[in-house]
Length: 120
Length: 106
Image 1 (tube, one colour):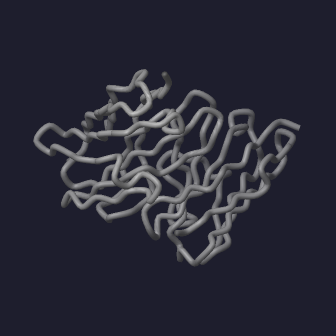
Image 2: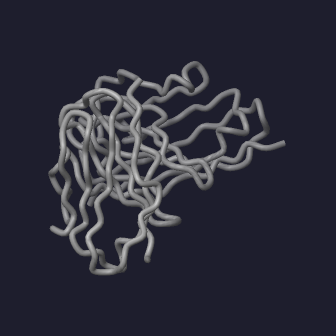
Image 3: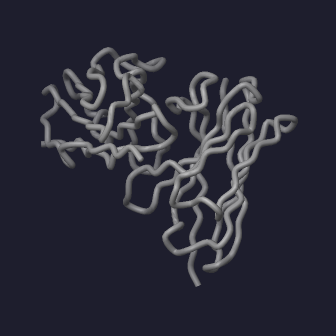
């Protein structure tokens, strides 16, 4: 079975940094585009970043320069390094798999989510 | 940047009735449109991709239509478990979810 298990998250002060991790199993991780999607409390879904099988990265324009997505195919793992965090970055962050092998696509498997709270 | 707009924000429907949700793209996305269902405290679930293809395990009462800039999600006969939030997402380019439609019990 496809599984996406997340770790990381927690409380961080404004201006601080945090790294989220995601471990995948049940599929050939290296073949797939992976993505991060976030959801602020009481709000809708917001795409954050994606990385394809060739490690080509895409970011939401509003986040460029502060967040870095990466992957380690030898560990079947996806990461999101978040710097210069702001209160408005407070959200549940989902790690997820993109269906198929294209650069973009629908998201067919989601992790359980990691809560990131940015507050002094 | 492609902007996705969903309507209505809230849809009040009685169990057994039909529900139609709309999603509009600010520019053509072809057929690269997905629909998701999300219940409180849960991760989203993929319902429809390619505008009209049901994802694995999705009941036939869910159907999607449209192309270009106008899309619909129809739930033919609402069951109790269908009351939830629904989001559309274009994937012609990375990103861009709609703001969501809440389907609530009338």
